Amino acid sequence: MIAVFGVLEPQYFLTLANLRSTTIIAAPMLIIAVALTVPLGLGEFDLSISNMTQLSGAVVVWFISNIGLWWPAAALLSLLIAGILGLIIGLVVVGSRVNAFIITLGAGTVLAGLEYGVHRGLTVYKGIPDSFTQLANGSIIGIKGGSIVAFAFAGIIWLLMEWTVTGRRMRAIGGNYEAARLSGVKVDQLRALSFAITASGAGLAAIILTAKSSSYYPNSASALLLPSYAACFLGTTVFRANIFQVTGTIVGVAFLATLQSGLIMVGVSSWIGQIVQGTILVGAVWSSKLAGRQSN
Image (cartoon, rainbow, N blue to C red):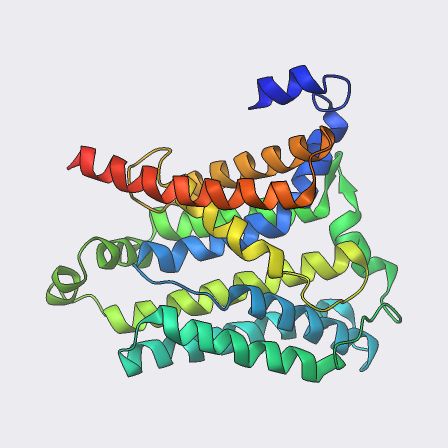
């Protein structure tokens, strides 16, 4: 793919400037996709993550612009609120024994209502300090702050899932729920925890999104839901068949971000880009299933 776009647009695509631009644009998607990897690894779906991101963006900007709170405190409070809401959603999923697909779909509608209630559907750009904007747009050794935050979050989740007892137990639940339960793993607690981790990731993505644009605007993360899931499923075809893992998800995000950047540079319309992304998601799920059957 890089070779194709490099031939079509060698003057602009194969440049360091394009690489930097692609990483900062992909930073929110990377955070959301990595956060989704946790519940997907347990066999759960969270369809509320884009709404959680949007609500968190509304909340952090409300704390900053309406309350006048110092932005680091506002960011921490919004992350805490997102984590608590995610834990509540997880507890409802566990307690109700209803499919998480349905619960999180309904929860997303509730979160969308809360988001509207915070700013009444208005765009907010006043009262946001430059120091907050620099969190995403500032550079360290030539790397944008948003990209650094995204990769740091990915590294933390990778360490959690690959090198901690909690992460291994989560993997055990995804591998065989009943066997994990009979082995003494606290499956319900870890399932609920996975939704809290996902919501916290959504809160972090919201901070990067609002800092990058120096504003809050409605439905800011709605376009990230499908690509984030596509990245996760693409990741299952990279290293270990049919297994959700952070490293695979990073590759999936890189693939989609490169594709998006290339399509923009060659002048493809946005609606065609959406068709391509949707097709890739279907193909990723199909490839994952085929790879899983071959490995068995």
